Amino acid sequence: MELKDLRPAEGSTKNRKRVGRGPASGTGKTAGRGMNGQKSRAGGGKGAGFEGGQTPLARRLPKLPGFRNFNRVEYLPVNVSRLEDKFEAGDVVDGDSLKAKGIIKHADALVKVLGDGEITKALIVRVDKVSATAKAKIEAAGGKVEEPC
Image (cartoon, rainbow, N blue to C red):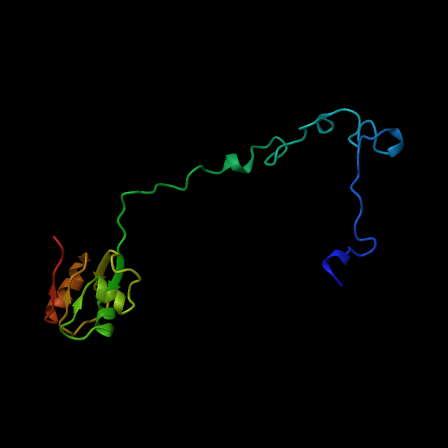
């Protein structure tokens, strides 16, 4: 069997109905559209969102979903408990080391250290932001927080 020999199964295909081809065809003159009216004319009929004169759903719903502040700066949260688990005493915690340990995906992402959990190791933390509780816990453990200017 070759590609040229392929044929559809017998009876599986039908010719399309050709309308408006004279009175003997069964669909001549008005081409199956009836006499007069909106649906008999070219381009006639209701639009996609028409709901019988009722105000359509697209017009009933609000246009925009609230307020979005395009100046908002988002920080990736990292708790001190994660730093306790992943780092050794004396390590420097910055974007590159966080990425290397698999805590964040991109080294240049903005990071904020939060104070959830406990920390016992003295770490040098160089990230974009540190919460007050996290700073207190890191310094109480003998570490140092160096925030950028």
